[in-house]
Length: 71
Image 1: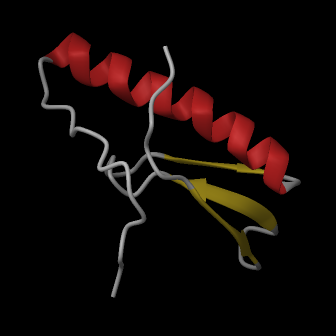
Image 2 (image 1 turned 30 degrees about the vertical axis):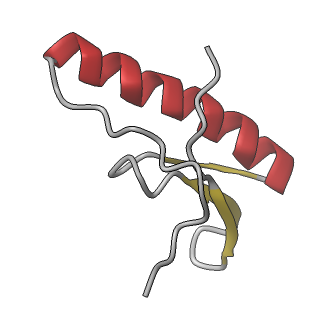
């Protein structure tokens, strides 16, 4: 299954890695040595996040399908 959540990728000097974060799913993030690896790891994290939410009956936000605006 393919989910349509926005994933933001950025460099973290503190972690010395690229971080990929799905802001619509609280706490759903992953890291990697390249943007591509961070994205691949984030896709796995996203699936695990959703599977865990389903297992515990927690709500799963619908993907907004557009660019998020963060302040």
